[in-house]
Length: 88
Image 1 (cartoon, rainbow, N blue to C red):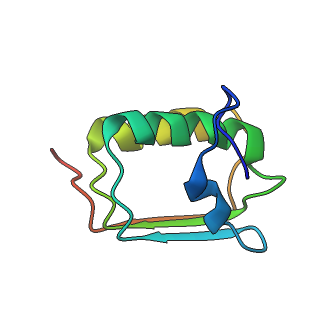
Image 2: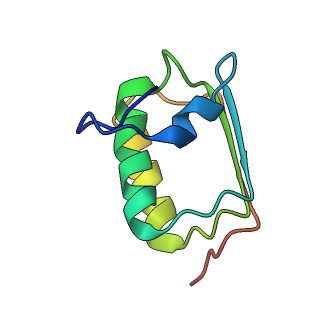
């Protein structure tokens, strides 16, 4: 099982298949979103190259944290964010 930077298991990372993670209708609260964002620093782009976040209850600050942590890597090939709480 993949884990966050703290070494704690983060089950959503097991959704990654062949470098692609379609995370659909998986509800993320602020704490989970922060752990997920931190873990991206360790897995992008070696393990994860494409990510789609669809209806995950992400708000502006959660998406900002994701982008902030992704910016510390060499980047994703594709990212899609659809049906979240942007503007909230």
